Length: 260
Image: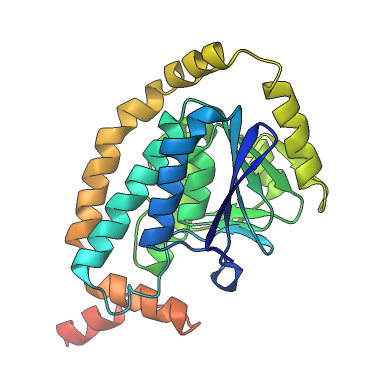
C-alpha cells in the first residue's frame, strides 16, 4: 500500500494519508505527493477530500529526524509543508478534511487550511509545537485566530491543549461532528451538496475568501525562517527525543547546567 493513496470516487478526488503506524505523520516525499495531487488533479474534480487511514487523521510532520536533525532535510520538510498548505488554499475546488481520530500538530494545521472539516465523535484536535520543540507557524499562529478567535488560538498553539470534536465544533474549527463510523456518509452528503453548485463560482468564492490567508502568508514565511534557523537547537533536540522516548521533555535542564 502506498503511503499516500490518491483515488477518484465519483466526481471527488480523495487523498488518504496511509501511515497509521505513526498516526499518519508525513515525511518530505509524502508531502510532495499530496501537494502534486492538489496542484495537478484537484481542478479536474468537483471537490477534494483529505483524510487519514487507520484511526488517525494526521500527526503533522514526522518527528523521527528531529532528534538528530539534518538541516538540509528539515529545511526541505518545512518549506514543503508550507507549499502543501498553500496548495490546499490555492486548489480551485472545495477541500474537505474528513477527520477520524487525532488531528495533531501539523495535522491540525491541515484542518485549518481546508475549506470545510467534518469529524467523528472520537476525533481530537490540537497543536504540539512548544511541547516537542517546535512552533506551529503554518496556520495555528496566524489563520486560526480568524477562525476561532485570538485568545483561543493562542491557547491551542502555545499551551498544546487537546480538544474533543464537540469542543472543536463549538470553537468553529470544524463544521460538523458525526457518529463514529458515519464519516463517509456525511462526506458524501457534503459532496452531493457541492455537486449541485457552479464550479466556476465556487472557485471565485473560494479564492476571494482567501483574503486572511493571503495576509498571513508573509507571517508564515517569516515564522518558517525562524524555525529553519532553530534547527539543531537544544529545545528542538530535547523535545523530539522526549517525544520519541515517551518521556516528559526537560527544556530547562541544559540551561540549568550551563548556569552552574
